[in-house]
Image 1 (cartoon, rainbow, N blue to C red):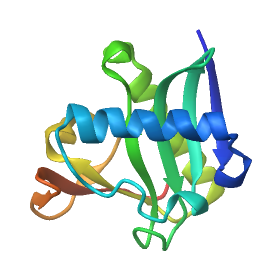
Image 2: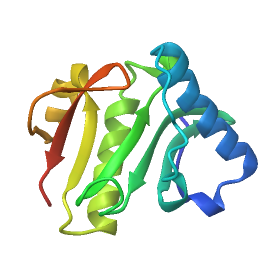
Image 3: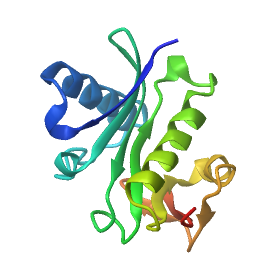
Image 4: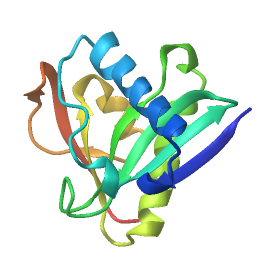
Length: 149
């Protein structure tokens, strides 16, 4: 159980923002042993989609408008903590992001910079790889796109 929330940056409480940043750091910096600049200046222009059970954050992604990271809208910082993986939350999260972006920015399409090992997961949701894998912050990534729906 739990609840899905999607909030503009300025509407996040301090505690909600702290939980989001802590989860992103736990996964992308600590778990993946990757030193990178998570606070990239884009959060204030994004919607922050998350699934919570009580105070526990079980899934998170940010939904970016067209023109911010790509010409298309985008999903980013997609994460599910290790304890919640394998439950279907990741698939539900990305599908909700797709649905939100298509409603919010119809006709824009969706682009992601996916970690390359997740290619098949994103392909199962309709994303198509474009170009060759590239190294970003020590991890291979792949540009993937979902056509407007």
